[in-house]
Each structure stands twice: as structure tokens, then as C-alpha cells.
Amino acid sequence: MSDVRIRIDFTPLADDEFVLGELTEELADELRDVGEVDRVELPVTDPNAKGVGELALGAVTVLAGVDPGYVQALVDVVLAFLQRHTGRRVHLRVGDIELTIDRPTHAQTDELIRTIQAAIERSRR
Image (tube, helix red, strand yellow):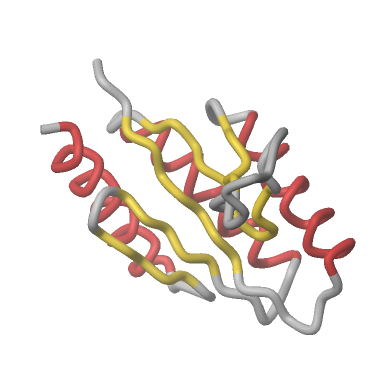
């Protein structure tokens, strides 16, 4: 089975870099219970720069398969993060499909899971 990388970003509020870094790491840690997570590196803007690239704040990627249980767990982690951090939105990108989540109803959550599964399937082709 081939997997697909899903990018997950959340909106900053009036946060400083320390708070954004902590929240990014919190989300990454929770997603690690679901699958392989990587922090997103910012593009290098200085062609003479050496060393490790800088990490983006508020963005991670997670390796995903289309298994319904996996997608449900991924959505559950994202929704729990949103419940703890009221006022934020999460943006998911699967291939060329982008979704924005804030406070979905139960029916919208079910639709979200189906949409993510379909996007993963489409990206795997």
C-alpha cells in the first residue's frame, strides 16, 4: 500500500514564535500516535546559507493511508486540537485538495473523513 503525505497547518492568533513553536510541537506529538510526522522546512532564501533549514511554525506533515480507521484517528486528533485551542482553524492539504476546518458538526466531520479518504485515494494514483 502506498501512502500519501498530508500537510496540516493551523492559523496563528496573536501568538509569538515561542507559543507557535509549542503548539506546533503539541500537534506533531499527538499526530505521532497516528503515524509518521515531519515538521515542514521553510525554503532556503539565501543561496550561500549552509546547514539545516529553518522549520515552519504551525505546519506539519503526516504520512497517511486510506484506511478508514487511520483517517478517523487523524481527524479526531485535529478536532481535539481545535477544541483545546478555540478560535483557530486547521488547513489540510492532500495532493491538490485543500480543506479548512474550524468547528465542524458531526455530519460535517463524517463528510470530512470521506473527503480526506477520497483525496488520499486520488493522490495515490
